[in-house]
Image (cartoon, rainbow, N blue to C red):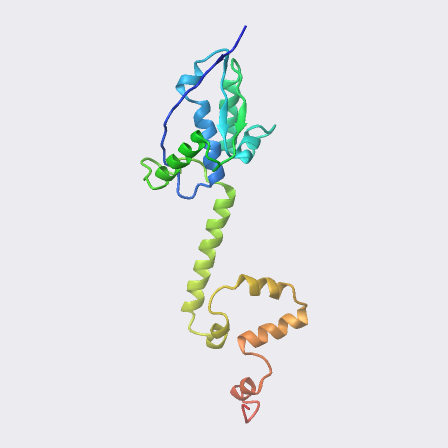
Length: 204
């Protein structure tokens, strides 16, 4: 029994989600291909799906799914492969390959369009959620810090959140960290601070 080869050209343009990663888009594209109506009813055919994302191919080819989107794609591909040969072919991107260049053009068009329907259209990744929460917490902290009527001296040095300074502070020994905090908050045993506290007559 010989298998027939399918050459299918389908132009599909769809908007997913602003916060969706490029990797998720590649996996979703594999899921979309595996569910094409012209393919799911085929039997004894060779269906080669080309993708320029090796990471997406590796995820849907793995033994265990890491996300619900990957699980859906794996299920659809396995269903298609029951009666067909379904090789996943990696093609290098941005190398002048006609089909791949056409896909890139469609991706640019989709990125400038608006999604109609309930969101999220695809599950949001854990890294996206962590990034959103971290960004929200930083903005919230900055607003509270700027609205605080006190700590005038500290705000001169710590106007906004400085992750580099925070990492540096965590790396210090306790005695050195204490000195850094005293200097940044102007609570060190300096003449001016001692004068404000009434413990010294001169600030110089």
